Length: 82
Image 1 (cartoon, rainbow, N blue to C red):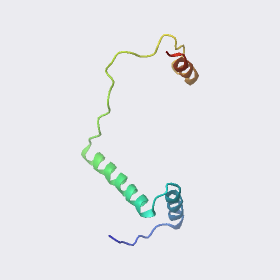
Image 2: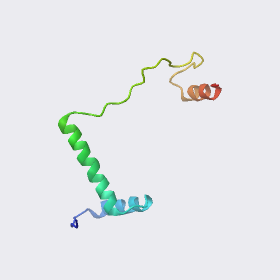
Image 3: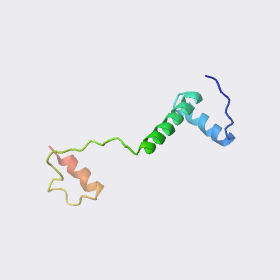
C-alpha cells in the first residue's frame, strides 16, 4: 500500500543513512520500526513479557577465579580452561 508521510528532514536524513548502511530500503526500515513499536505496545498492554530461559544445572565460578567482578580475571580463567 502506498502512503504519504510527513517526516522531519533531519530524521529522514538519518533514516536514509541507516538504510544505506544496512543495505535495505527506507520502506523496510520504517516497517521494521513500526513492527517493533507495535510489538512493544501490545506486550506492555497485556502485561506479559516473554519468559527467559533459566539454566537449572550445577556449576558456577571455578575457585580459581579470584575476582568475579573483574573482566580480566574472567578472561584469564577462560583461557586456562581445558
